[in-house]
Length: 118
Image 1 (cartoon, rainbow, N blue to C red):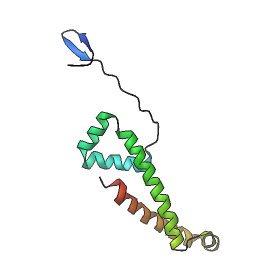
Image 2 (cartoon, helix red, strand yellow; image 1 turned 30 degrees about the vertical axis):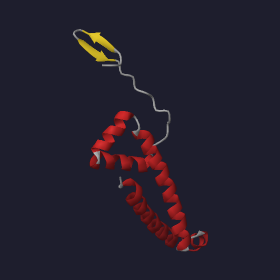
Image 3 (tube, helix red, strand yellow; image 1 turned 45 degrees about the horizontal axis):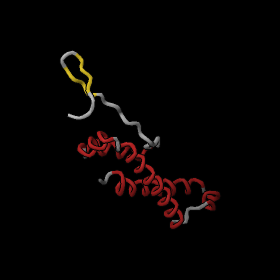
Image 4 (cartoon, one colour; image 1 turned 180 degrees about the horizontal axis):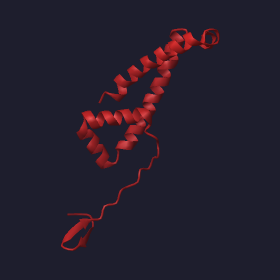
């Protein structure tokens, strides 16, 4: 059958060793959202990646991509809409309102393109 086994009573139990992850990266909020999506909507892919030990590095990669994409989108959208330090200094409430709208829009794009799309 391959591998090594230990006989316990009348049964042979395989000697399983978990290979440690080489990378210790955080999966972050974006990776957690994608993990939950996979677990709920694509269980087969989730199980295969978990079984082969590639799930956490994949989720960390998704988190990095989503974080970079979110930051880039927020910066570009703020620049296009004229939301800058001058507005922040002159009218803080307007700046906060507009930045919240920009962040919500960027979050929607990241969710649609990376997180909830397999």
